[in-house]
Structures are given as C-alpha cells and as structure tokens.
Image (cartoon, rainbow over all chains, first blue to last red; front, side, top):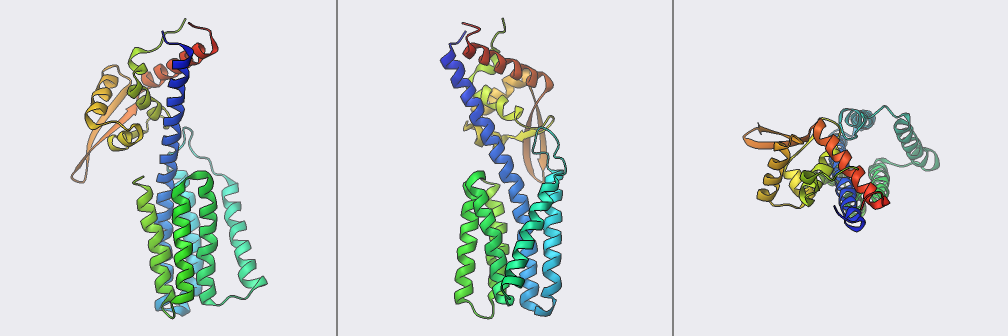
Length: 183
Length: 99
C-alpha cells in the first residue's frame, strides 16, 4: 500500500494528463475551425481582389458559411464525455460580434473597402488572441501574427491589399490550424 | 477496504488510462498522440499498452489510413471501471481511510 503523499502525486499526474488531453482536444477542434475559416477567408479575399463588385455578396456568404461550419464542427466532434448540445449562447456570441462590428464600420464610422479589409481580420483575431489567454498560447501566437501582418499590409501594400490579406488572413489561419494539430 | 489496481498503478499505465478515460466512451487516441501526451518512447508505450490490453483494460485497433498504419487505443468498459476504482482508492488513502 502507498502513503498519502504518493497517492497525491498519482492524482496530480492524472490531473496533469487530463488537462493535456483537454488542451489537445481543444486544439484539434480549433484547428478544424481555423482551417475552415482560412479557406473561406482566402476565397473571400480572392474574390475581392479579382472581382471587387462581387465582394458585397462574397463576404456575407463567407460569414454565414463560416458560422454554420463552426456550429457543425462543434456538434459533430466528439470532444466531450457527453455529446455536445446545441448552445444558443454560441449563436448569440456571433450575433453580438457581427452587430458590434457593423456598428463600428457603418454607423460610428463609414469604412471603405480597404478599411473593412483590415478591420474585420483585426477585430476577429483580437477575440482569438483574448481567448488564447485562457485556452492556449497557440491562439495568442496566431492572433498576434495575423494582426501584425494585417497592419503591415494596410500601411505598406497598395492595390494588392486584398491579395495580401488572402495569404495573410486566409493562409495564416490555414497554417495556424495545421500547426495546432502538431502541438 | 479497496485495493490499488497493480496493473493501473504503474506510472506510465496510470497516465495512459487517465488520458483514455478523459475521452468520450468508445473514443480512442492514436498511438502517436498518446506518445506525445505521456512523453513515453515507442517501445515503452507499446509494452505498457500490451499489458493493459492483456488485462482487458484497453482495446487496440490497427488500421491503414492511406498507406500509413495507424494504431488507436481505446479504454474498455472494464478499464474505465478499474480506473474509477483506482482513483477512488487513491482518494481514500489521501483522506486517511486507508494506511
């Protein structure tokens, strides 16, 4: 029989490994979401670059497909001991997120295509970075890198800014998602 | 008085069972993922998984994903029960119910 000190150490080992499994599952889920959004954002920026007129249709489609995909990933991935139930708060988070973004870009300010192209990725990645303070350093790293590259592009890249954003935001999320699967 | 499970009590096997038990029922972990989580070497991990499998605590499924072999380890109902009892015994020891 072991003493209470050894028993405590064994339970601490169990807690440690359970935390690692949870972190690993979270990264797996987040990587799927990042890959999904990465592909959509890449396509959205490409449309904006090649056919600016159709950007007004492309971005709402990206947002709807993106949020729908996130909900599907959440419901279909068996990441919890109990199956994930539909959580209306998840929908509410996105409604508030987009409502606040809309107020900033269309009511408080009147952003042009270039400003919109920088605002939404920075706004999105800000939440990503903040979430990372609780959920894992990878979110912080991916968020900060994309925000920094977006700002660099905004101030230094001319006409091809949407193309820059396709690779920085879309490509960044794809690379970040693949990286999450390896850590 | 409950007894510690000798098969689970070994440190690496305890980690393996803890990791598998944290998953939903019938979900497993790939060998490579388990190796990363536990920090074990290939040979060591393989040997301890075999011990757990012989005891009926885990099931091991080998399949090919494309051309790559993939081994998935899953905790069985017996293994989950044994792990829960083992944890309960550890908690009893800490609470001073056992010496």
